[in-house]
Length: 268
Length: 291
Image (cartoon, rainbow over all chains, first blue to last red; front, side):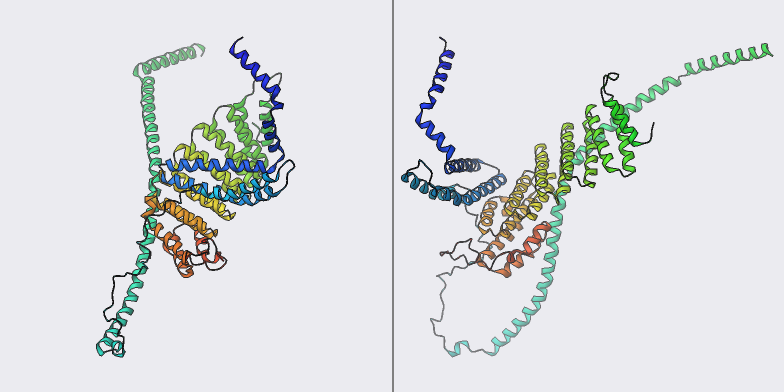
């Protein structure tokens, strides 16, 4: 008996005795009748695919596509989190053939699901690079000390003549600067608009460069074809116009006219 | 040669039917007749018949193995179908035309055909339009001409915004970012990311917006750009519940250079919320709690 025969016989025997395989039957029965198990299975597969995608993201070198994939992972997570309540409702339903312990176990599984969904990495673990350059610093510094040690009596805050003059000058300068500032604001807005238009033009031109290259090559091909055709045409026309053919044409024409004149004379 | 288009059509039909006396269809003559018939019908404004004539002419060209002419006829047929508002046929014809263009190896006209179809169906069947836009973008990306795909991505995202599906719209903006990254179009890339963040914010999804911002900050081009600063200002304003600041950012010039649809969303931004955003003080309040 060959190996192949043995294999086929084993297969047929297995198939015949499949109906006695208790575990397999139970499994298939459960997935058949039980909506919860089906849905849970679907959940598991989705979580697996999301985890795989997250792994791919970590190996991904191209930042932009990493960002796009992270966004997709987050979408999947959001969808899964929405479905969790539905699963919970199914978990609480009583199904025939199910023990109370299994029911409790199912509940626990469902409760564990949100945690698992959250645990799927989607690139938020790495925080942003420091942007505190732009945010105002709000921490107070302990090294700064005040001079006067708290003696804030009346004289301290009294305005002297000079200080009120300073104050007035300060107000005037501030008003002048405000109008100057407005001018600067308008200039900055104009510059922003110009900058945006310039970058858009830049990108548009970049877009058109390969198109121009294509046009260039196509037109080159067309001109060379035309030149070729022109040369061949010139040769052909020259051949037709060659003096030998011309003389032969004239001679034959004279002969035909001579014959015609002769016939005319004879018939007159 | 009869000048009546109907007669031409019936003659051409007879030429293509195989009978006992005719053993092989004369596609060349038939195609010519179909084309002339179509012109005649169009001149007399019988668009339905003209469309049928163009379809048959296109088929004739396919039989003669000239996919370019066939595709052109299909496009004209689709334009007529658009005039007659038969939307299924519009999508069908444009798709067929696009396939024929791909057969010729010309990706640009193929994606143009799908783009025209999508534009025609935007109002009537937005889901189909989105599918057509996605297919058009894929054709261009396969051919390596990502830059042409920018407009298509933007149009698709605006359709999603009209349908109020904000996560999908933001995903499309991120895909625009990927395409822009491939061709080093940093300005478009940064604008795309800023648009995605604004769309997330409009959809009341502060957490997603922040996550998106964190992701994008890892990309150098975005980090060094104006759009980055605007985005960070916007997010800090949101976190502190400062409506004035949000409005100021929304009227800034950086935002005014984005798409019209996004500008409209940005101007509506703080009023999209239910009430003012809570302070992110790190106590029991959830970041997402907008009440």
